[in-house]
Length: 362
Image (cartoon, rainbow, N blue to C red):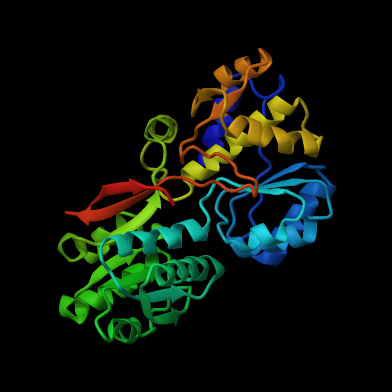
């Protein structure tokens, strides 16, 4: 609902180039072939020049391979796989989400700083989780640590799967750290298997992937059992995020989902950046102009504008002044590869609350 909130705010501020914006939202069902069909339809039939994809890495790769010869910008708000960078030879892909290299590397950096020298990794079988695991393993090894084992498990939840057996393999030899890299449902299954086997099964430090920074973990596993578990996420932009969360709650209440779950802020920021870039370029069809404008509105220098300040941003653009959009998810400065490189925050679960211990550069 982050994209819909951004659309509403933009239209309430007068729209884009004198007209309200309408998002043509299609459901790829996380299916590569469906994603390609929908993307081609938007490009060929609707003559879209800007594709915002809130899909995972694999469907976005499929879309990129199928549509790259066509003139379009692809803005990914959830696809964090590093493969996108290598495939993008025309500077066509941008993203508001931190890459797997930043997240996995950040986990390793935090664990090394805590004194860990051995790490086991429980990794899901999909591009995102494997990318995080690869980055953590590489950085941890470069920092002088040793990866004791990497245990692969099915990406999708499986009620009959033996999570306890994988946990036993990962905990063999008593590593200092276990890095758990699934999505929430599978993460809960692993941690329940851990508590069922008693906490003595693994007495070291749990590091949970960014996708496990959710209240569902302490709620389902228990506040006592999860006390002291750590993880790393983009630090975000406190003022911008608070503005987006307040607007989200006012617009949708609390029954429509939480604005703090992963990727809501990244989706919101992607719509803002797309609209501001088109306004800065003065066109919705000139891909080169929009590409240049994206970095211009996202990066310093310029007057800082944030969530809920679309009208202010447009006024500055019309006055010929530079702007620097600082988003709900973070600063969203775009580098030469179209990536964001946010400050990271290490958190720890304390009595069911995610408490920030430190922020650090990736």
